[in-house]
Image 1: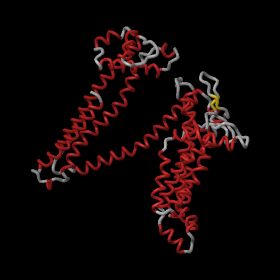
Image 2: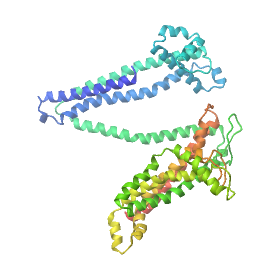
Image 3: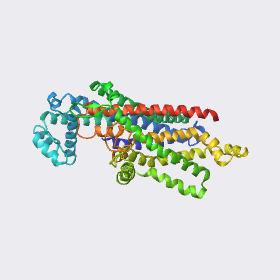
Image 4: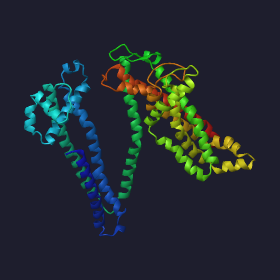
Length: 486
């Protein structure tokens, strides 16, 4: 029984539990709800929650743990020669899973029965032909022990799914019967339901925290593997980025970090002044009719995919900057440059700064403006000396979000700035960023255990620490200026 069918059964059992719990509560007081501690619906919700939620959590945990446990069991069937031949253990296990899924497809479609499939396992060449006919692409020949490992994978996964179905249904039925037995006129069903829902909300709100912790641990764990293979001193102090798969790489982060900061700086130089001035005009000067048209028009920029901005940089902005600025000033002949990516990225960030800053400025109390006008200040003086300082903490947050968006952008940099890792002050030279190299190091058919691949996690961890420091700095600025208005 698969997970989808189990979820449908749990949903049906939950609906049945609600009806049964409500009906039992009313039957105990002969239909007079005034004799119950809580409304009848709470008794039904109690039965439904205890029947569904524990069983659902068991199902979710089982689905997460079963593949890990089965893989550990099957890994013992992989021979050292498979790994010594140039494939990693992960790639061999991927072949095992692919063959097992192909076997399952052959049986599910009726192409083979279990007996015919078992007869093909000792004949790996015939098995590969049948799998290829079923649409399973395998580059290398199937080894006999790999076919046996795929058969064992299927058997253990099928056994696990059977045990999962029995366990989940047993927990669901037990919760259903136990909660139904607890129904009584004096039972505080409302308190139980509200407490249950509160814990569910706490668990839901913890997902973001747990996700952040998981991201940090995954980055730290893989970065630790990288630094065991490559010296941390060379990574943090070298000024050269020259990855060479197979050995002899020079993986210094500074050229990538410099490109990231350079592109982001130019993008913010474009986005922050334009976005703030647009926000001030829309919130303080524009008429309601003009604001109703201009604000959505500006926000349209936020809905354009970054790949479209990248094509705009490649085909329009890059050649324009090269022909009108770079060549006449003798600064370069390439249309791919830091300036190209920075200008286009700044255009993309304008709605982030403008829209958020506009909402923040509008949230400043009107009493502050009225007090300023009462003292004889003009509108521009009121904006500059009252409204803007009051809105500064929120504006800093908007700029920080735009900066984070700029640091994490990839497609515009790939198409607009190129992929050259260098330290240079010329804004019309091609450079690259950390995010672009993370993508390039993890794509392609490369050995995952090599330092040239694992360096992507070290780059990601460095970028995470950098943005975290930026957040802490911005938080300090916000708190410092906010104290003046508390």
